[in-house]
Image (tube, rainbow, N blue to C red; front, side):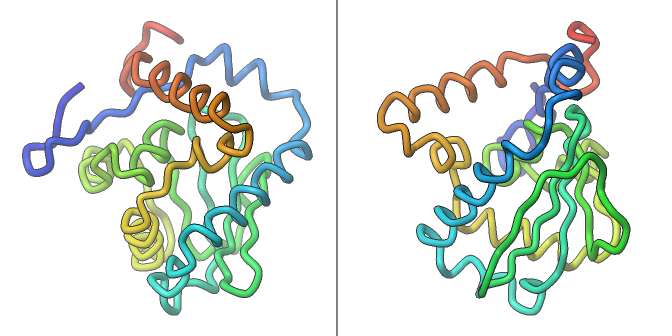
Length: 182
């Protein structure tokens, strides 16, 4: 994968196989809701200053749209009661939305991919309030959140190893724009 000249971080994230997207499309989204609530609660406990970093953007509604999954997420990072929910498609009325391959969104959030390079290479798209999207990215980037370990860490060492194995598998998928899995 190409690297950013300024940061040395990978620029092109891998894409999930299209068969995986088709396979999960008919599944209900309700089982994702408790996992999202758990992840937000763990993020809030581990990184309480995250909301301060968002400033006046903490009350905004963000859409996160993985382009290689048949669902998206709406995030409301309100300090008093943060909310994240899975939706079939992003609704109107969002303050900002960020779209791109799931691995790119996670890699940018975890700091393993160069968010600026993803944006300028048009791997990620930002619509709406760009300042709010940038504040969200900066807040998450500063927190150095490991989403896999946050979500699966409750299962102990086995969960952490599983998260690492999934991350390693994602790294071996073709880069965005690759067609060998389509």
